[in-house]
Image (cartoon, rainbow, N blue to C red):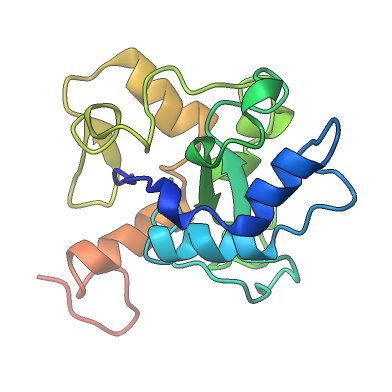
Length: 192
């Protein structure tokens, strides 16, 4: 997870117009087009998922779902007044790892399942927040196996990483291992 510095100047005019000109406007209202919003968030984040840092874009993934979705850092169901606030939005991947297409059940980022998973729409991260440096990259580090860990073994950070976001699943750890040490995790490469 990397700190995302929001800039209100990047907010698309279409979001402003929708918020200001639509009575009882809601994020998933029928007249709201998310394409310009997704494009603005992608550019602001360098086309990386706010949580797993995987590369994302507007194209469809192998699972025929868009590779990018809009995440509300403060959940919409819990904070309805913030659902159209650009400063509460980040771009995230579709939450399905594509490295193992036969294991479609590998959910992560905003698609984690269960009562403590982000998918239920009410789960707020306990400590991690990509919109605040002190609550994101200052709290975590990566080991050589590709695992993300809390610097201080904080149980709330560990909960966010492993339960709420599932950022240490095998697929994501393998992706990080290849970046940390390009010789690891690749078939046919000699490991030293």
